[in-house]
Length: 379
Image 1 (cartoon, rainbow, N blue to C red):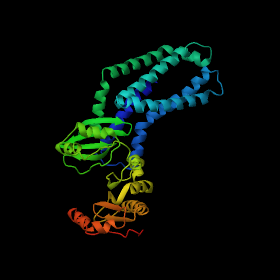
Image 2 (image 1 turned 60 degrees about the vertical axis):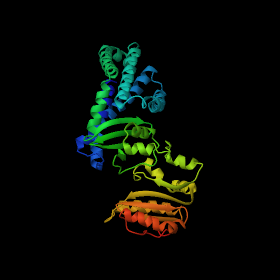
Image 3 (image 1 turned 90 degrees about the horizontal axis):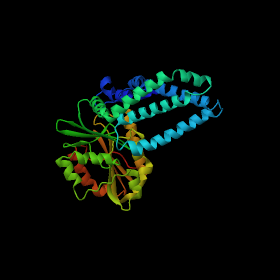
Image 4 (image 1 turned 30 degrees about the horizontal axis):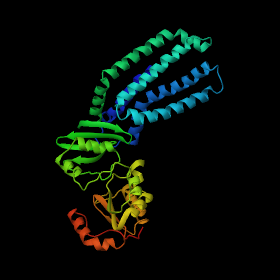
């Protein structure tokens, strides 16, 4: 039990220091070998101790229940019940109010208290297991009480805040961290370098200011919007206070499906589909929902990684896959190539002809080739 209370905060600190230890810059991905080696080194101690504790829990429950054949099954049931309850408590009660180290300290204290209770219950009895437990009771109980007092002192004296700040400074080396909060959707961090603010969602930069090069059009995490409001610049103030801007902190798929109005344009300004959460916005099903929400001359615009010189096989396959998904729904799909591919999908086949002159001027200003690439009906 005391090992769990010690390893939980150490593991969190080690994970946050990993980027600095491995020499990775912000935004740089690790190789598969690095992921495997560092994950094993950091997570193995906690995983092994947790696995041993589960086996001990089965043995202790079997001893207390006179070695009933159902004892192991009950331990699995209680473990599943606790995991479900813990997920609900963590999501709705702990995340909004506590940082990661405070949660780790609370879990450590819960483990220490359960260990003390088990020792108290097991010190009396006639079985071999209980007699052995009674013999080691003073030493084990004293050790658990020492760690419980130390954990409680750290929690009450807010030592966890110092650990939180030190670990974030290591995790985001080179940035001044202004804010880092968790929500049910993930982590939102705001970092400053010189006069530039960068807003990260789960480690991915989604907005920069006052010189924006990455902007978000849809954001379902209210913490991100709150972070932008708490760290304003003249640019973001103008955008957020514009009476024409309406912010909906809701999942984009749900909003499109339930919207009562139709739209002239939908801008899908999201990172590439590199995670399951992002993949949901690049499926034929979601494109169908957008198509139904557009007016007759409406357009969907999205962008993907590209290149003006050479496309890797992965980038090419990603572009072709999403383009084919769009073509299965929209009657006209056009690609504007460049360092960033701009894809326009029209709800009507007549719309591209009506808007060709305007879009060509946009391509020229963006230093893209004039005209469009690809036949809408081609593969």
